[in-house]
Amino acid sequence: EPAAARCRGAALGRAVRGGPMPRTSLHRRESLLLLAAAALGGAGLWARCFTGFPGRLPTAAAKDAVLHHVSSPGRSSSRHLSSVALAAESSDSEGSSAATATTDRPYFPNSTEEMVRQAAGAVMAAYRDGFTRQTIRLSTEDVFNMEDLYSQGAQALLKASLPMMKSFARNLWGGEFLKDVKVSIVDEEVSTLLYREAENPLQDAAVLFLPGRELVTEQKVRSFFDSMGDRLVVLANTEAAPATWKVENQGRDFYLVSDADLGAEVAETFREITYYYYSTPFQNWAMTYFRVYPNPWQIYIESLEYEQILLGEWPAKPPYEEIMERIEEYEVKGKIKTFQKVGKMLKDQQGGGGD
Image 1: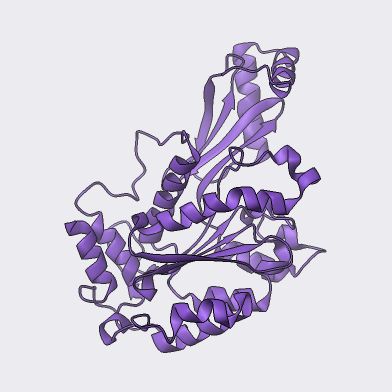
Image 2 (image 1 turned 90 degrees about the vertical axis):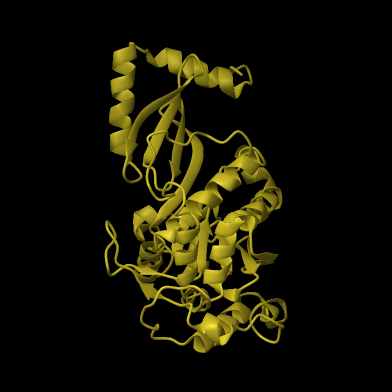
């Protein structure tokens, strides 16, 4: 299609906007990436992505398709956009901006496949806005019962959810420009690297699934992040990792168990949470966090009649106190008694809930 052709042409360096060259040359960046990837997953597994493979080394034109400074209405001139991000941005120029919050908000996906497409779309919308480092959380409840985590272990969670994560990686870039998705466990637990190899190396992307505290603060992993340059890197489901942590805690999860300063640095780098879909019990309500970039955060609870009630919208993930305030307002307005919501929760746990 014409839009896809323009995107492909721009990514190959045939139609890119002007701008200063980055401080690090592309050859140097590729060398760093090869070293970091080799440390993460073994040279034999990853070298094919970057060197010695016909068509993988960037052409002279593609070397110019690097970091650009963009100044446009509503966007700071200091924000850095990769040329591939610019290409993705221009490919959507014929329609409404993907990075504009819509009045008609997105809603819960009806299937796992719809969720991964929704998440990939949100990630790419943020990438077009210059966010090359992002964090997401995908719901795993349709593929794994988290109540079985303690009895079956994190390996069971990984096995059940890995096909979902592969689908997410494939759906990046709208599912186009894909050559392969390489998968490797990169620690002694379940942290998994899914490397999306594209037709052009500038469009490669990395997804770290279930990355724990120790992994993300290791020097080899931080070097890998740096080596990716302006390529997309996504952390997925850090809260479900064996060594759990959250980017919004700004490194506080790392105190006493790891290097807190390094943890805060990683959390700041990946602070943009572009997709979040997670349900959890909260004050005896079935509550769902939902965010699809660039739309605001939304909090829903399931009513006594099994309807999804929107408690509110926030520009950032709301803290506990604000959610509690909204729930109390809802309960007072609806004259809901504690025994009513507790009774519903017990009924649901026994499998007698609504459809």
